[in-house]
Length: 252
Image (cartoon, rainbow, N blue to C red; front, side):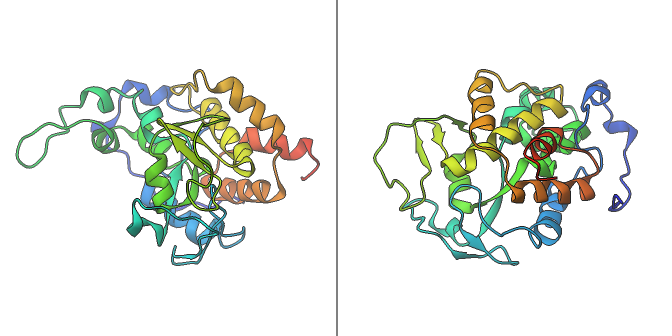
């Protein structure tokens, strides 16, 4: 049974032509990023292991890191104490497909009369953007410092840099490129492939072939399948990329 969380009130002043083509099979239930994070914290990561995607660090119900699993960094020290919810497909990657992000909107004016654009404007006026931003299939827990360091950089199989860049956490970041650990590559790939399939406005681009290879090379796990089931029960839409992988492996 699908659970419903509140009533979404849509103002007609916020409807844009792009909204009708915003989603094929994406999130159409919850447009609040804040609410999505709370549901993940309280109704998903209570039933699957509380481990961050990149470093497999443990965290508790209050989002505090209880075991960094060897992660260290000289940067963003204050953000190493808690987890944050990482957009695997960065918000900027899909946000730049919305005119409000690039150009702003007449509704995006602050109290001093100054216009603004970017994420803040897209979030303010475009419902389609908000649904994408709040899609829980694309949100994974990460150490706050890692979330900051990853920024909106693309992933790659190899990054030439010194070993143990972040202690024993095997993530590498250099020249605006991120090499994730092998155990995260399959989940990352399937998040990208899901977002492209669910939202016509988003196109993966030149990374797609590599991500498709990761999907095959690093198969879905029972934990990923369980996470997907829990999110589907809350958000209401299927993640067909992960579900087909679970069925193929005989996990369901």
